[in-house]
Length: 354
Image 1 (cartoon, rainbow, N blue to C red):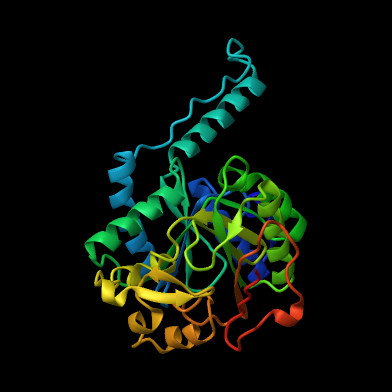
Image 2: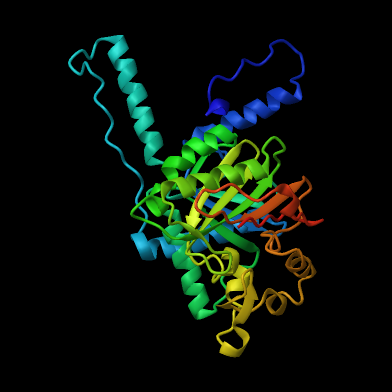
C-alpha cells in the first residue's frame, strides 16, 4: 500500500511539524499491524452501512460475523504461511543472507497476525468495510440473512445493510470493464445463465459517469451469454456496484429482493402472511414480498425513496457528499434506450433500462 511505503523523514531542529507530517505518522502506525488499513483494489470483504455510529457498527459486525463464521467455517485459526527459504541457508555468517532471513521471518509473523475479519478505512461516512480472509463473503452474508429471515430475530441495532464484496478494482471505466469481464464469468458465462439486474451507487466520487458504467457492465453480461435476461421484479442475480472514492466494489448476490436489499433491519420485519406478500413491480408480475410502504410506513426517508422508484438508498443515512444510485437492467448486451427515457429523481438517481 502506498501509505505503508516509504515515509519521509521528519523535519529536524526545533521546527514544528505541519499537519501533513502528523497524518503520515498516524498512517505509519496503522501499517504496523500487517495488512491493508484502507479500502483498496484487490480486497474481498463486506461493506456495511450504519446510522451515525461507526464504532458500534464495527463491534456489531465482528460479533455477528464471528458467530456465523464459526458456524460455517469452524473456529478461527490464524493464517500461518510457511516462510520461503532464504536461498543460502548454509552461509549463516553472510550478512546478506542473515538480513534476508530476518525479513522473511518478519513477513511470516505479519501474515500470522492477519485475522479472518479486519475493519479497514472505507473512505465514506457511515460506511464500514470489513476485510475478509479465507472465506467467501457472498455465502457468509447470504447465510446470515437467510437465518434472520427465517427466525425473525433481530441481532443488530446500528447496522443497516450488509453487502458482500467479492472483488475490488480501480474506479475507472476501462479498469472496471476489464475486471468485470473475468469477474462475472462464474455467474453469466455460457453454459451458465440467469436473470439479472444491476444496482449502482457512488460515494465521494465525481469522475465516474453512471450511465457509462451501467452500459459497459450490462454489455459485458450480454457478451458472456446472450441468454442472460433482465428481470427487475425478482432476478436470480443482482450485480452490486459500489464506488467509494477511487475504488469500485463488485459482487453478485442472490435473493436481493427477498432479503430486502440485504437490509438487516428490514429482513426481520417481513411478514409470512400471504395476504400481505403480493406486490407488483416493473412489468406487473407479482412478487411474494411485503410492499416497502408497509414495511417503511414509519420511515420518512424510506417512504420518500419508494416514491422515486427502485432506488437503493432508502436504508442509508444522508451523506454529506453527493451520492448517486442506479438500478439498471440490460438485455442481452444490446444498447440502452435513449437518454430521453431515463428518469432522474430529485433525491436519488434511478435508471431503469430494459
